[in-house]
Image 1 (tube, rainbow, N blue to C red):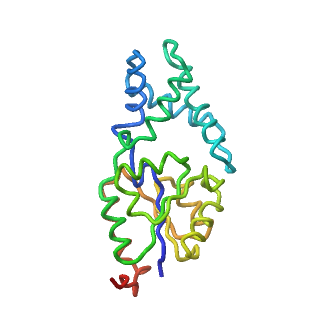
Image 2 (cartoon, rainbow, N blue to C red; image 1 turned 120 degrees about the vertical axis):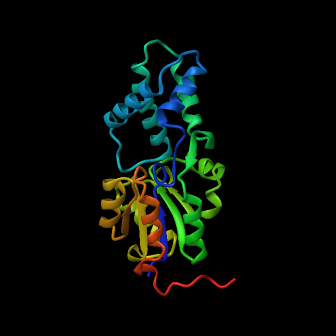
Image 3 (tube, one colour; image 1 turned 180 degrees about the vertical axis):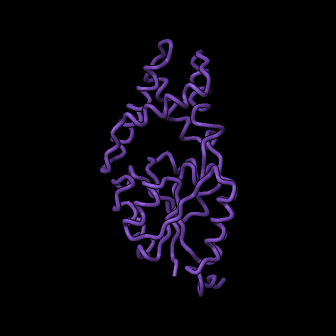
Length: 228
């Protein structure tokens, strides 16, 4: 029987609004430099792939890594900006709910799980900024817990972050389902830790219908809503 459902954050419960590149472009425009969002989208992908993301982490390490990513994007800009001020503005922009939107159906899915007595949590490779984003989007009250790599000390795909979430939610790995958009960091990693897993594809128009089906799957047979 399913007791807990874990969700990845970005590209699963939430997504950047209107895009990662657009947020970079908006912040950069405030510094007097107008760069297309598409430029930032490509440079951010390149920079993210170029950085080594160790599984063991801390809040300080996450800040350093994001500074390293942003520095690589900065180096591709056609003119100079005050890097530390620009990085600080970028970093804070993604801490605001204004840079994000809830995935369609996210609140309804969390509420449905809560209604039948299943615990819910986020397991993400983010840092502490995620809390303010989820709160600003109205999703935080629908979650029992939020586990971010910077606080747990491990990044996905490490099994430790999944097992930590299970312990904190008082559920065994076999009683826990993890849902995320990454085949490696979410699906394969969760299964390797003994959890059930569902691959969520935000670009797939059937994704929400398939996710809704989880609520009525065999794993939930016999699960009744808590007494009022």
